[in-house]
Length: 229
Image 1 (cartoon, one colour):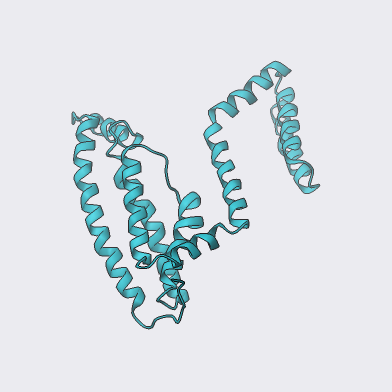
Image 2: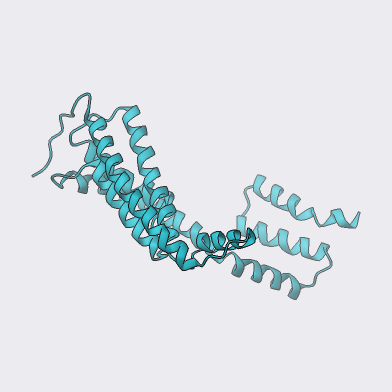
């Protein structure tokens, strides 16, 4: 029976959420009660909570960025981004997406944490691409979904083909370790070197993809939109 007593923390959390009590207080109380039920003293419980926070602090920062982005969207970040692009003559959806892809690739190659579907693509890059496209194109639901798909893919392309150019990135270390287990001796520098060629090929192919996408986007009618000079 004693081993099941530690599950009382789950009950406390469920009851607290149902009663809409303060979330932080409910979680802390559930943690303390679970710790006492497991035979821990106050110091041990606080030590576990502290270590858990430190080990997962980067995840906490990620959640903070979600809150910040939500506030910015609430006060018109997407609208301002779209309006700003509409005023730039010559800007197109395909060009904007490709520029972001290139910047994302270079940033990943230097292991700079820049980009992300939630942090960049959805609140900033996609509205900018929509604003550029709406100058000349009637964005139907199908075209809008295609635009969303390409914007999301640009994040994946840039990150995937860029991160392995950094010799000590997690992806490179995984490749090196896996190959060594199979009997192949290779260094992170060698993986990074050959990843440059794959990245350059991706950049060139993405130019073609974005160009063809822009042609397809403009096919089938234009929008009657006045653009500020």
